[in-house]
Amino acid sequence: MKRLLILATLPFLFASCAQDSLTGNSYSRHEAGQAQSVRMGRITSIRGVEIEGNKTGGALVGAAAGGFLGNQVGSGSGQTAATVGGALLGGAAGSHAGKAITAKQGLEIQVKLDEGGSISVVQEVDKNESFSQGDRVRVLSNGGRTRVTH
Image (cartoon, rainbow, N blue to C red):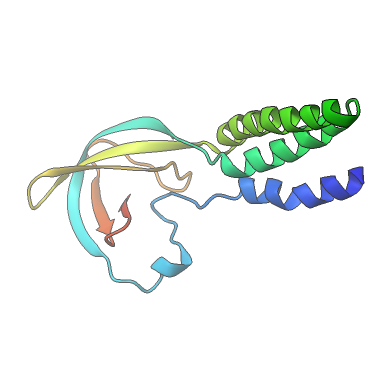
């Protein structure tokens, strides 16, 4: 029974760790082949930010583990209470852990556009692309997502 529960929760653990990339050079499957507007500009400021992680998968795994552990305590109504309490505490702990594990380092990039005005875009740090204040960049937008690239 214990092994079955562990095996049943593994897909949720891996799914909670999988998170779409938010770099300027990554595209989802549905974005491929879609037209984007392109605006040119110059970076006026950059600052590091943290992109919040995903907490859903961690909560599921934590609740399952907490419920399982709580079920090992006592018998009768005490066992039921321990199972429910374990699931609640495990879910909260798993949510917090999942959020911390999947958080990403990001950049808030402010760009003064050639056409006038400025925009600010937050995207994940990409080890293959670095930005500096004063860099000439492209701002790509498809109506749902905006990214900055060289």
